[in-house]
Structures are given as structure tokens and as C-alpha cells.
Length: 401
Image (tube, rainbow, N blue to C red; front, top):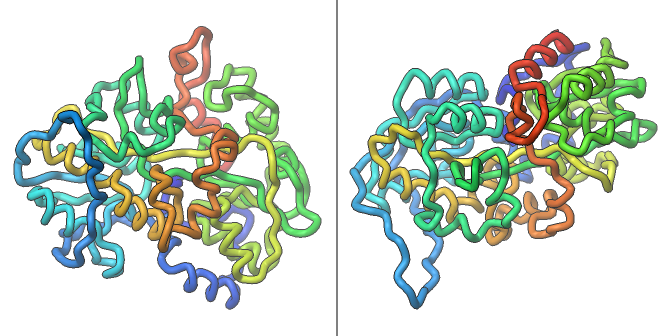
């Protein structure tokens, strides 16, 4: 789901060859769903075109909480691909209809590639809402830079599976700070003769690719059987990093763009990789008989919308959260990014193939996903002493650089 740096391509041990013709056809057939790997900065103003219907309100016999009068404007910070206004493709525009139906004009729309860029931009400017990934969300909650959300004002929140509504990355002391937007999970993909489990991905010979992200350490912890792969003691962190370093060398590449994985398998240059089920779907659509490890736990992440503690336009911020969690917007965002929608009701139309790849609506499959949370020294508020995210970052950069 969005992960590590977004949109840049950095390959270690040599770049893979250009995308094979068959895979190009597969990507074209799947529309724009490679936006998850191209989060380049974009601060263009929203266009005012293309109506997108909002989710119809469900009649209720009792009064429900309502959002106050909008302030007429809103400022937004997010990852590219999450806020589309038709500037890249006229089919992707869920900002114009929001402005028209809410009366809240998006006066600032800053889009970035990476969690580090997001944190820097958030510290430099004032925003009403921000799309945060788990490693940043934990920091913002801990610093008191985002506010508790009244979920009664976000109808779409209650359409999401309980598992997503209660993710530790966006809750603290029984309070909710984020409304899930899109989510993803990683599997081990392998070609004939490649490693067939997570441990094999880290230890076997042959060309392999890992996501260039400190949270990839959690995948190694899962391979070692650690129960909570994001809250590691120093001994557990040492073991996970040692597993990752066991076969680190010229045959291993670290990717920031999922297209590098697709290209690698399409050209036969990769034996195995950490990748999403949607990547697998694209490869199979291109005629590549790449396989995936089935069963067992998988690392994953969900990104969420949060409201700034200093939001100047809180009512418009709530209208934004309600809009972005609506079925129609979730459907369009999933189809555009190739990431799973938080609302299973969005799984039809153009989002159908994405939802099928991620088994959206299958609780047993979702239960296998170990969703990311920012590693913390207090072990996520539990007893014990754990390593925090800054230490993970340091250990990861030592491994990769």
C-alpha cells in the first residue's frame, strides 16, 4: 500500500530489463491501477469537472449526529493517487464532486511520494486533513498533532470490517484517530525453481527483490515465527536483521516501485520477490505463470485519513472523511491505485479485479494479514522494552546502503 518511498525506482544489484510487451498489454488492460507505484509530487489545483455520485444515505428511524456548517474551504496533504481531480486522467476525479456537494473548496492540495516527505510537509504547513501511513500515524498521534475522530460523523466508517476500524496504527486508548482508506498485503511470489516461503525469500540463492522499507524487517520477523512482528525486542530485531543479511548481495534488489517487480518477472530476471496479490494478477494476465505462497501470515499496511489537531476547517474536514470513505469514492480509488478499498461494498465495477486479488470480504484471508503499526519503545503500550522505529530505520539503511 503505499510503502517505503513512493514513485522512485531504486534497484540494488542491477536494474531489471524493460517491461515485456505482454506485461505492457496487461497493465494497459488493467487501466490506471499502477498509480500505487508512482506517487510523485503534485500541487496543481483541483479541476472542476466530472460528477461522482456519493453513497446514498441509509434511512434511519432515529436522529443521527450531523456535521456543522462547512467553512467553505479545506487544505489537504496526501500521497499522490489518493486525491485525484482529473489532472492525470479525466476518469479519476473525486475532488470536483466533493467541492460541489460539500461546498468546501480544496484551496491547498499537496501530494508527496514518501512518509518522510509527508512528515516534513506536515511540519512546515498547516493542513486540515492528511492521509497517513502507519509509521507516520503513530508519530502524529504520539505528538498530539492529530485529533480524535467522532466516527458517528463518518457514516462510511461503520461499513468497514471491524478489523480495519480497530487497527492499532490508528487507535490509542480506545480512541479512533484515523479512518482507513486503502490497504494492501505482501506475499512471496516466485517463478519456477524460486523459494517458496518467506524464509526462503531471504536465504535462498537467485535473484530476489524486497521492498525498500524499514517495515520489511517485520516480514523477516514473521518468517522467524514472532507473534507481533512490529514490536520487537532488541534480540528479535537482531535475529530478523541477521536473517535479512544472510544472503544480501548483488543478486538481491530493493525496490520502491512495484513495476520493477513486474518487469523482473516478465523478463525472467527475478526468481522471487515480495509483492502484492495485485502484482500477481497483472503478471498472470500477461501470461506469466508466477506463483504465490499460500497460507501463513502476511505483512500488510492500511493508510488512513486523519484530521489535524489544529484544523482551521474542522467541519469541512469531517465532510472530507465522510466523502473519502463513501462507497463510490472507495471504488474509484481502488481501481485507480490497485489497492484494496476499506469498504467491501466498493468491490464492483472497475474495482472488482482489485478486490478479487486481495480477497476483499473474506474474513479468513484478512485475518492472515499482520497490519503495520509504528514500532515503539514501549511495545505498543504493552509491558516490556522494544525497539522503536528510528532504530528500525537505522538498521535498515545499514543493511541496504
